[in-house]
Length: 315
Ligand SMILES: [Zn+2]
Image (cartoon, rainbow, N blue to C red; front, side, top):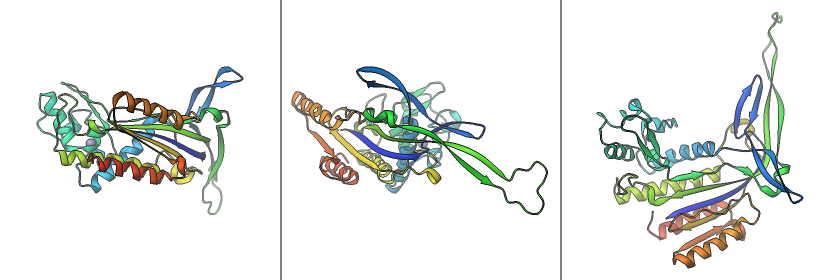
């Protein structure tokens, strides 16, 4: 079973994805973006959030949901340090001595860590072993039709030092700094292949038992629910928590991989619904489409998603 979620959210005065600091200036991530204006294509630069940043937040919540369900999480991932068994030093924490066989290495990692089972890993030693992530995140980008209104603007802030008695020569009483803030209505896509969880990417056979696979799938869905309902994604939340909300979600649940039309397009819900019908008719498959269209909250949609998958005995 495959789940694809399109999300739209409004974020005013956010600093969700900063890329570099030059002196006292922190820059927001910005990307080139093609838009159409008066029948002509042009490129503009817009604020953006990387899929890496969204993926990191998701995996942090996946750690918490996995632990709540008593599923194994390795020592590194538990600390939100996603090294993903990248070398001998990190793999030895899971299995010692390290087997020479690729399948045995993969099996040991999947068994000992849900995050690496679901989020993939790359063991870059001899023999190298790679596991593809079961989930995918796009970048979060401004909605196309109103992308020209997306802005980045530096905000001036100051830190004040306490001054007691006489001021020392050269000591500054305040330090000024700029944080570039973004304002936009963003859209992003999240996909997850529930069939890949707990299954070897090398042999295509289950590595853990059926009950454990179901629990792992449940954790993967609860983590995206938490991520959207709590808005705990992106950087600088302690002082630049975005002013705004999740506006819309569109969830497609299919038997095989299917991705919702990107929420950067205005008609993405109607388009996805149309595409899903063709898939259902052509392949004779069950499909389910849940959206906030009929006044449902995003939480109601996400709960409906989990219940539908539970009814199908997948989790
Ligand atoms: Zn791990």
